[in-house]
Length: 117
Image 1 (tube, helix red, strand yellow):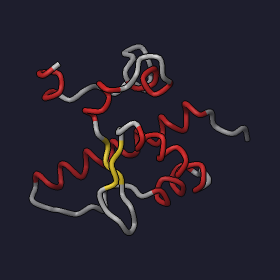
Image 2 (tube, one colour):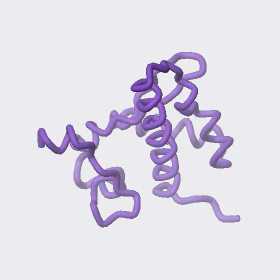
Image 3 (tube, helix red, strand yellow):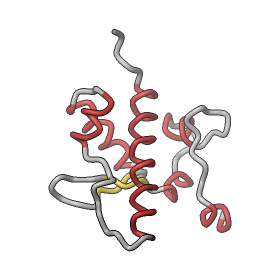
Image 4 (cartoon, helix red, strand yellow):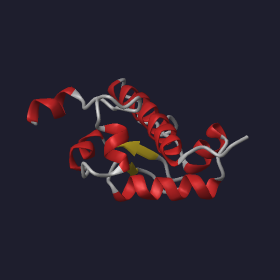
């Protein structure tokens, strides 16, 4: 089985963290402050069948670009930050993946963000 490409890994990690963030936000709106819907590095490695080292390396890149934020310490769980999409440099892989409307991994900015840009 061939190894997944870097774009595939980033795309799958971002999708999982975004889905967890949306579930977390819905739980918060309902008055539940549970972080369990947010994935940890180990959760992502297990679910996506990637080596934990690979997941941590890619999470570090997403974190350096402010696309994800850790919100707990043990285990460290990650939340997606849609606002950071507007700060990505256009000539980067992450921009091409998540900000180009023609990309299959395109992430729609939220309504509040669109209103201010």
